Image 1 (tube, rainbow, N blue to C red):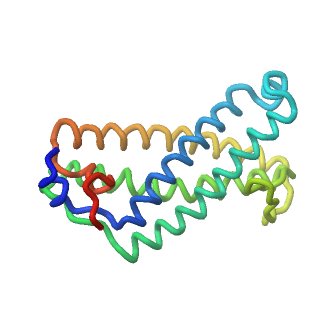
Image 2: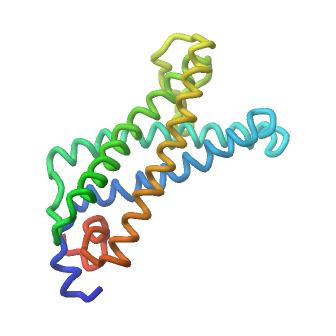
Length: 193
């Protein structure tokens, strides 16, 4: 894309773009760690990574989830404050509806999933962590409820993975095929704002 086009594409506020990419990295990390936990299970993790490695995997996964929750709340606040930029070129109605639906679902799920993870963890009697900090459980222990909530947590992880893959595919389609400035709304190249 030429410099002239890069300067004319409408963009999200810089703070929104920073949070988007930071949350994307944290979601990728949380999904990889969560998938590792799901694939191996607790006993399998201990056999493969030892007790200390297993603790680190769980701590990082929980920490990423807590950070995602806090950053998503900030992102919603920024969205309410700054709104979203217009499209440089009109999108077909079906694409606009699909984009808004996927974005809306990602916003909701990226808030709901960490809350359910926090609830499931506390209900299972496990510590809720942000790095070395232990956060309040906020929910009473209930092992049966914890198992149900962890099931929902896993299902939401799959849903978020599918939505994120669709989101990435659409962004690449707009950047490489349509070249319509949609992806540039969230990028930093040629940024002056």
